[in-house]
Length: 85
Image 1 (spheres, rainbow, N blue to C red):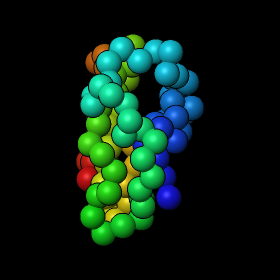
Image 2: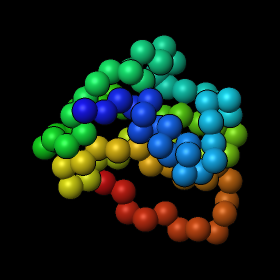
Image 3: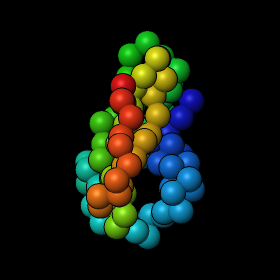
Image 4: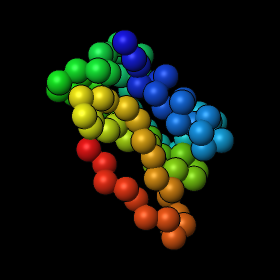
């Protein structure tokens, strides 16, 4: 089982980011962050979301029956984005 909070924080750690850097979050209420869902399922279970920090944009991905969080830079960085989903 997984929560988006845990998945987002895993990405934060990779990119040296944190909740302190969050500029905006959707849905705004944030209740969805702690809902448990099965991240190894045949259809997406987690809530759709977007989290903007000062340096990155975080979003849900569903690929090969796995649901997880990924992110891209907010600023041009000359790095191509791989196929998602």
